[in-house]
Length: 245
Image (cartoon, rainbow, N blue to C red; front, side, top):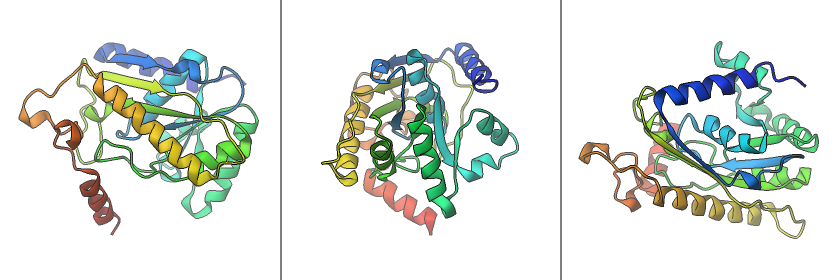
């Protein structure tokens, strides 16, 4: 099937990154199969993570179909693009339908992208994960590939003004070795393993990130355990609870 929308969107994004001189560092793409279904489970610190997660699969010549909230599909600008790129809407009132569609796509040989933390991590660490990514990989019999993205939170994240014109920002994308479905491992155990892998990948890209805060007012994009002023995981959880209430 011709990608009449996805390919032009990828081209446009790459052109914008060149204009902004974003420093992309993509590693681990060899873990993404060139054929057949796979689930990519990515960390989530930015509203832009789906773009960079998708870029992480391009060296393997794969296009990622992301699961995204139904509300985003309702947007008059984003909606037609998402549908044209064949992403998967998630209606929280009918989540089973979205899950079944994702499994059908996986069995059909597509790559499905999931953010198992469900919402952006304000602490810039990996939150507790939903088990859906592990369950759908097991149901479809496809590999589950952990991925970490680091850097886009400096452009646009929760609780901060977006700065989409900021130049020269390094962006690290790292895919890890796949977790192979195993009937002997429960979805809960697989999810625990996935979270550990994702945190290890995130620790790796944070440790080798080439940029540092430029002054005391620029430490917000670093997690507390690395000397930044982002909320701790407990503080971030409290903020999320307050927002939900």
